[in-house]
Length: 171
Image (cartoon, one colour):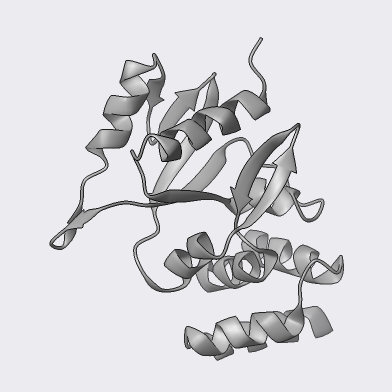
């Protein structure tokens, strides 16, 4: 029976085969690498892809998946039956998050994972109580370098988002 490590091996193969330039695990699954957080049922990944003009064509990802027998269900690829949501990193914070990802071990597989400082900003930027709780979990368990988070916030004009996290922590 396939494991989550097999899913990461498949995603690594997708990058090695140049279907995407790079990828990094983000969202709730990424947070699990750093802290106990709320549950998640899928693996979200940011991807860097070749862009032609203003459009990003993710058709190559779906062709790669079909060729390997992976199915599509709604917005997810089912890789070894695990739902994987592919999100174009685009530009700004998301792009920087992929380029600076930590490589962490999952059952012997090296996995690019968005750093917790980026995750906290991404959660708070997206808004909502659920996401803010995840940002605070990362902050409270000591996973976050607050100086780095402040630098990232400044670089991406997200100082107000960082202040929002700080205010929520003080409550």
